[in-house]
Image (cartoon, rainbow, N blue to C red; front, side):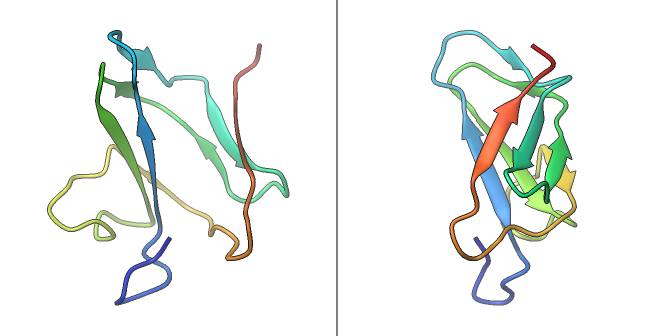
Length: 86
């Protein structure tokens, strides 16, 4: 997703629906075509959002990104997979 200012202002949100924190260390969010491939780190607090922004922290005004990533999402149905070593 982009913004009205720039299609490059992409962001991704996770939401933790559980009552326990989730550790994202050693998890990867990867597109089926290999790009982007985002090494995740940090904690998604219980019942909270986790915001990833592309390239800088300007995509979502007034909300600080939890993680900055590089690599563009496809504009035609990008399929993302959340995985770890297991």
